[in-house]
Length: 234
Image 1: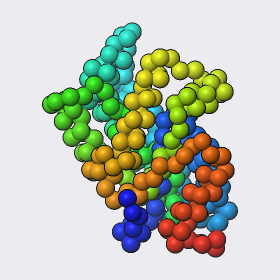
Image 2 (image 1 turned 135 degrees about the horizontal axis):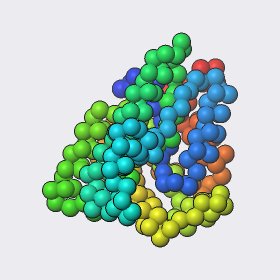
Image 3 (image 1 turned 90 degrees about the vertical axis):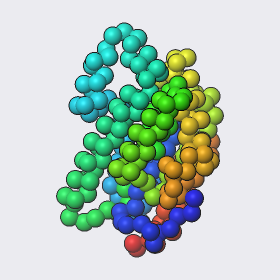
Image 4 (image 1 turned 180 degrees about the horizontal axis):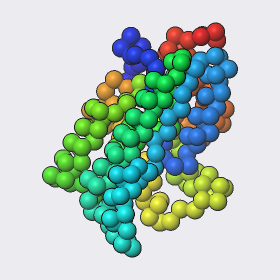
């Protein structure tokens, strides 16, 4: 979708999206460095892993019977959606407070994921009425959440993702692999225009994550500076 800076209020929210292990944190750190070299003030935002807030942790505690939590997430995706929503809204409130407390306003919010991840990560075996319920909860969250102005999806094969995770000592179970494949499919659906109610007004772009992180970061930082009307002395 096209980016329209006339329709945006500052700070501009830029999110880097993708599955675990695709290289988001690396690229984000390099983009941050590039922008700060250009004297463009930034502030970081990271979507939390679900269950990090009090409400979500409490709900998880209720399902701490061996194997039951996974059964709940798969069989009742509405609960999964609510857990992520609770975390997202809690951390967004903290971000807004951090911005309000700063003496100078940051021009760019750099997000390690955004509310778009709620759609990608909260999918389960949804059909019929329950799919409608989950979609309604997601849409309600989107209306209340801080939505990105630009979202870039880092994409590579799941074999490459697994290799990168293994190199860091992280190994995927068969269940993990299925989950990542589902998340990646849902992300691609979002970024290929399959769920326009969630991406309307957001510049979305697929990025080939097989390239060097430095090259990706250089390209993204230049695009961000151009679209935000910032030059090297901004």
